[in-house]
Image (tube, rainbow, N blue to C red; front, side, top):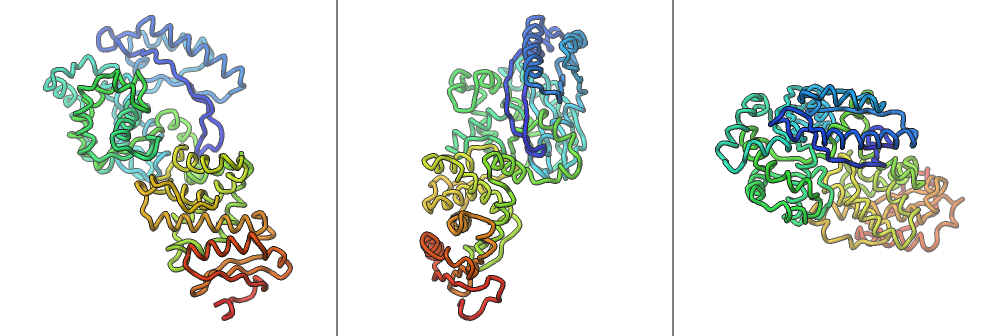
Amino acid sequence: MVIYEGSPRAPRTVWNEKVAARLGRDLSETGLIPKEASDEALGALARYARILDDLGVTDVQTVATAAAREAANGAEFLAAVAELGLEPRLLTGEEEARISATGAIGAFPGARGVVADLGGGSLELVSIVDGECHQASSLPLGTLRLPALDRSDKKRFNTRVRAQLDKVGWAAAHPGPLYMVGGTWRAFAAYAMMRRDYPLSDPHGFRLDVEEADMLAQRLIAADPAKLAECPGISQMRAEYLPDAVALLRPLLKALEPDELVFSSWGIREGLLFDRLDPVQRAKDPLIAGVSEFATMLGAAITDAALVAGWSVELAGNGGITGHANAQDERLRLVAAQLSDALQRVEPNLRLSHASAWALDKRWIDCLPAERAQICAALYASLGRTDYPERLLALADRDALRDSVTWGLGFRLARKLGGGSRPALSASRLHCKKRKLVLRLDPSWAELAHYPVTRELEILAGWLGVEAKLKIAPTDSEIDESDA
């Protein structure tokens, strides 16, 4: 059960719990949902129904997948679920595949490739292009069924897997990455991240080339689950499934020949939500939507962030002296400006740790690792720190991080000018002219032209390698030679 709040485009999880009843564990042998598994699942669902009722959650979607779809007693199980008032919706294999892929589409705007959603009862494969699902297939290769294929006999295991994959020849012909959806795939990502000493903690958006993925899979096939469970991000349950899953992965990679692997934390649940959005909501930037909702809770409005980003626009692009801001920079500057504002609502001794956690560890959608590093550097600089964490260099190059520090120092100057107030920013203008950084203040606001504004202007100019100049003059007049 997952309960969401916040922006429809980037929903925030406020409750998430799971009971691994393993409904499909005997499908390969008996074709039935075991009674003990059914009882455990119904007990959990009864508890969920009570919690939802107590919390007043009225928008509830209950979906059933492979086990209920394929078991001979699946209809009986769903009838018992319905008696709890949860109104279960039984997805067909194609629906399950499409909705899982819709989650990946929501997480990676413009994605093109094949989604591979590995669940307990099935493996869903779906081709996606430009925000749309195309071919979709559901194969009986879920984690609960793989043990019956007996990976100890490698040749026989691969033959059985290939027999299933041969049914989806379209997947092999579809270019692009393989988008990996499902908890067991994320456990594989956690293992790869640990081996690489990766500087981020969230597997969402983690990328792995095919050669490295195959090498790690070979290593994991013979791994001890008890040892795997000691790895950060790998639960005991996932550790048990992982050797079989990577045994499946090797022939999967060979058959599909993807460009790379991209791991997604968005799957069928988020797909159900994204599927209901209208075209306008779908088109929203999920990073901006997510940051805006999060920062607004702390009292930092996106309108104020947009004002600061606009006020400091000449600091964007190549360190702020030459070049021009691009659309991607402006997107990052906007979210960094809003998070910078939100940091000021945090207790001072917690701000630096929050800057790092928000930028690098919090799950943002459609935010590349390099972009996380840039946001982190900007937040550090907004707190007066140009010595960003060394691990950022494993994610982004020095030039990009230097630009981000420039943004952050600009946010800091805007805040010092007049508490970041709209009147103060509207009565001032920051611009670069030749080898000078000029801050103009309208004469009616001349009292602001003192420490710490002068100090922050000098720090920013020093960072840029130019001279600082503070001028009292109407901000709506043309820049003249005296500014040079």
